[in-house]
Image 1 (spheres, rainbow, N blue to C red):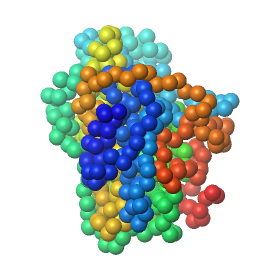
Image 2: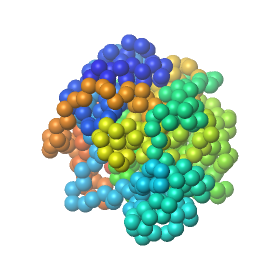
Image 3: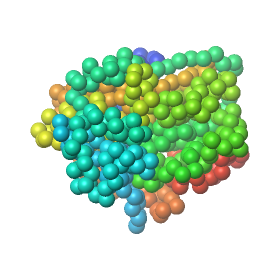
Image 4: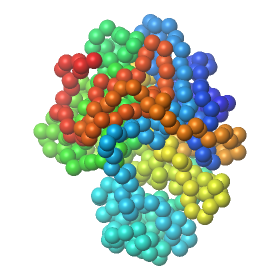
Amino acid sequence: MDVTQALLDSIWNSLGGKADAPRQVQFTSQGALPSAFPVTDLAASTMAAAGLAVDELRQAAGFGPALLAVDRRLASFWLASSLRPRGWQVPPLWDPIAGNYATRDGWIRLHTNAPHHRAAAERVLGSHGDRAGMAASVAAWDALALETAIVQAGGCAAQMRSAKEWSIHPQGLAVAAEPLMHMQEHAASGRAKFAAAFDPARPLCGLKVLDLTRVLAGPAATRFLAAYGAQVLRIDPPSWDEPGVVPEMTLGKRCARLDLHKPQDRAVFEQLLSGADIILHGYRSDALEHLGYGADWRRARNPGLIDVSLDAYGWSGPWATRRGFDSLVQMSSGIAHAGMLWRQVETPFPLPVQALDYAAGYLLAAAAVRGVAMRLNGVGALRARTSLARTAKLLLDQGTDYRQEPALARESAEDLAETLERTPWGEARRIIWPIALQGCPARWQHPACALGSAPARWETEAPPG
């Protein structure tokens, strides 16, 4: 658990928190996920940082510090999936063509979950109905040349590099120079205002969160904010879907659709942003700028807005606007290569879960809540950002020679919360929430929902309790 505490100290320092705060956290349970890297420690420490931010907000509102405990085993489970359906199944997470392939000189990963990303890969490699056909096409390429061709075609791919190769790569150098969490304050008059009297048991109640995130990292952050009372409205384009993760990630939220290329929908979006307390977005670093909603525009439209963002490969360097996902960053940064050596196999060996996504998500949540505390104290509005690649560096910096712990105890019925969640797909239960903050339980007002199932407006009345 020394690794967990050391990670929390580093994370909390990057968030600008008080140095002694992490010492109040108690980490419970033994064991770890099997990996070359301390993934369980990363899970517990990032969740603890988000929990500390909630307690800091409560203290800013005049309440004393609360006991905070994080169950490392349950935190590990939440890095994979928290949902346990009853009588139905979540659709597959991965497209059949997605995965690792051998090239002439190494390995490459293709990310084809989105139809337009698969189409881009097929423009380069040809259309194949199965992995065998795709593998034959990939085998004729050098890894770097294929990565370059797919990215230039608008797709997503990553050559497997070692940590040493990444450390001297121009993008690896750029990421290494970035802070884990870049925190920037902007002038904003007045203090944060809550819709009702501050409730220490629901410290984010009354706050509006505009969620422009997809897949895992950003949605994990907004799911956390919803757990402590925030009103989260997720916005997706008309045709976007991610069926393999929607039941997991829309817990506590309302989900609407807008086409930001249409004037009428843009007007709705601009009104929503004007009323938001927090915006959290996970598009490529230049995507909102291209839509006319860059950082300067957002700040002018809503000076008190807490603006939190994530991208894949960092905010500087030649890949700052490159498409990317957790599995690709693991290949690029050396994590999959280090796992291969650790496992003593001849194929890429990634982390056992999408740990970069979830860890970055809890970092984003912690930054957002710290921003609320700052506003409550009369400090200016916060703009914060991190990346999957910088989160990968946090893990890589721990090395692979840490003390390996025994495997986690297997999941049992006692690990499931009593509450039955009634989703559009059927009933389900969730793994017990790993964070125990005295007097402040996690509680989601809405079950998971389908994308586009709600109107694009803020709720005018409190949801049923």
